[in-house]
Amino acid sequence: MHKDVRHLVLMCSAVNAIDASALESLEAINHRLSDAGVRLHLSEVKGPVMDALARSHFLESLTGKVFLSQNDAFSTLLVQTEEENAPASPPDHWLARGLI
Image 1 (tube, rainbow, N blue to C red):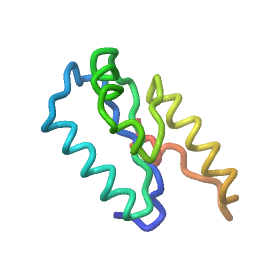
Image 2: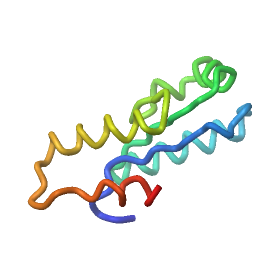
Image 3: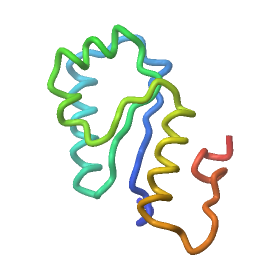
Image 4: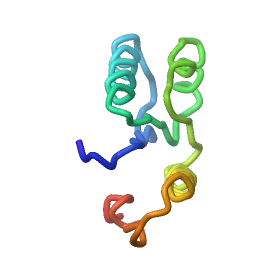
C-alpha cells in the first residue's frame, strides 16, 4: 500500500444484500486498514444493505463514514485531507479518482 494513502472508499452501488460472511469480511478489512492507518469509508449503500449494517455493530467500528454518493465522498475527503496537510505541490485530483 502506498505510504500516503489515508482513506479508502468502497463504492457499494452494486451491492443489493449483505450476509454474515460479507459482514465478517468487511470487519476484517476495516480492522486491517485501521492497523495500517487507513480509514475505510462506504459510498452509495442501498437501503436494505444499510439496514443490515445498522443491525450489526459494524457501523460503530467503521473507521470512516458512509457517504450518499461517491462524488460526495471524494469531495469531502479531498477537502479534509487538504486541510490536514497543506501539500507542497497541488494535489492530482484525477489520480485520487482513479482517472475517472
